[in-house]
Amino acid sequence: MVSFILCLIALADLAHSARVAEVVGAETPPPAIVIGFVGGFVRRDAMAHSEVQVAAHLRRDYPSGVYAQVFENRHRETARAEIVRLVDVNHDGTLSNEEKRQARILLYGHSWGASEVVVLARELESAGIPVLLTIQVDSIAKPGENDGLIPANVSEAANFYQADGLVRGQRQIRAADPSRTHILGNFLFDYKANPIDCKEYPWYDRFFMRSHIEIECDPKVWNQVESLIRVRLSSQRP
Image (cartoon, rainbow, N blue to C red; front, side):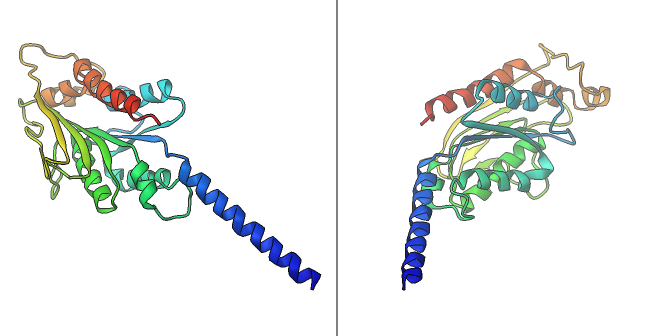
């Protein structure tokens, strides 16, 4: 009889501990999640590229409370899985409505990477996960992708593009639901009169995709990208 009572007490303690862990997990907000995508066949650790530099700056200046990482554009599924893992703060394998509500996600990318930003945002919409901000820089849609229509789970979206050369970015993004998504702007940059020296990039990129590469290494563009991200990180701090 005594053993039976002790067993019941032990089970009650375990149940209580599980409830406490669940409550604590629910009350612990996930980090702000900043995901960048590089374009073309660029490696995620290629520091010459502005997308990679932005993430490095954020990791340096936000040592806690912010997760900033860059992925190759062909690894969107990996990025999505990482987002889900981070949003699932109690690690039970299921995203609750509260966990989704607390998600703070910002996405940015260049070229094919910018197109993946929109596709990933759309996938997160299907999962009921909100996105604070998407930023596209000279977005080039992959076959079968629509990089011009921003899904309704995105609060704000910005588009930077150039319109010269063989490779030209998406000129205009629009909101699927303007009542839920604010388009910050479609910002045109022209490098004919003010060329940018991208000497760290391969010669063939600079020759065949000159303007497309110039906007990627233009500090004016990426200072704006980084500023948009930082403002929202500061305003969204718990």
